[in-house]
Length: 536
Image 1 (cartoon, rainbow, N blue to C red):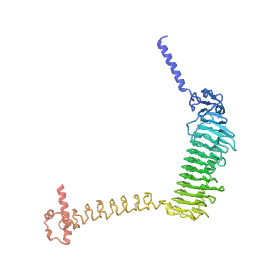
Image 2: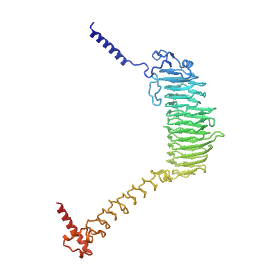
Image 3: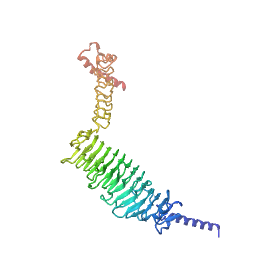
Image 4: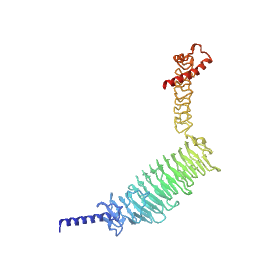
């Protein structure tokens, strides 16, 4: 056979193989081929995903051989619950893909772990990373999607969809737990004790971080219920909560922060958005946006006997359309509460309502648009002891608020505030007499209508303006108006030179009184004609 024929056949064979490789669709494209040393869990019959030396068809079989540091790849499919007692890494089919806005086919593209009680349980020193799963409970009641209440290794819950039909999404008391980029979905606002919970902590739990997650229709988003001072340094930030009962409950915390969260209710809910239940110390609630839904946006309630709180800061929150914006109940035993720079609008009962507490200071808050009614007010203080300073509000009960602050500067005592139009030292204030950029300022050198400006070249009314042709004090005025007594270059103020005057044949020595003005007109006309002729 000629060499060219072999060559053609070889090329055709390569082409066919290359074409087949391009058009072939991997069975589970979302799952990278696991390293040979890792463990793989796959559904029975799914031979395409069972490539590693250690492969199992159940999570529990993989848990039985796992040691600290084992990486377990879980292929798409639905799996029964498992319990781990070691520190492992669980990678689902969608690991590395943000769970908040993931739109995958759950039946073919997700690794699903489900159980009627607990879906995943960690015991002993168990813990680790859970990345890229859908985890769900299938029955209502006392069950948990991820139970890690064992004081074990930290839980790193990332990029998951957690569906809660029972009490808890993640229930943990492990130090250093991080929860980020997950979507928590509940069955309704009445169910669920906590999508993320630390409950009944007998020993301190440090460094919980819950950030950049979404919560939808859960009973409580983040529930921190511990003995006094046992939940320490928790950070709850930049989450989005929609149509849940309560976003956050804090009890027994120390130096916790709740910041930058967006909480929205589309329907009325008789739940508080952020509830400080008692025994909280050094807590900061700041920069949250709470909109709609009724009842209280932020509430302090030391309901338990012997419960006290201290060093609480509520600042820079934006609240709209709640029953009460910020409320301190008469059961609250709080010593040291700062409420500052919050903006509260459209409350149906009270903007800020103090019923209890001691050592409370309020500064720079703006409350407006509260629904009129008996006992309703923008600013409402039943304690008669709180200190109100520079707060804005129209309606008041027992409090001091200033309606004028609603339209201006919340801090009128700040002389350097560029946003305050009433601030006399404000460089951007058009009414500031010391503002060099203010055209209506009599001391403004750039003001064309400033009669006291000696250096304003464009001000025709300025008596000291050297370029003003009608300036009687201008020695360089050659307009011939005859009104400049200080013009030494023009005999008798005629506005023309002696040489030019001589050409008219007029004896300047006899010019007095009205003759000066008359001659000025004649000489001016003559000079104008002469100069135009000269130009032509």
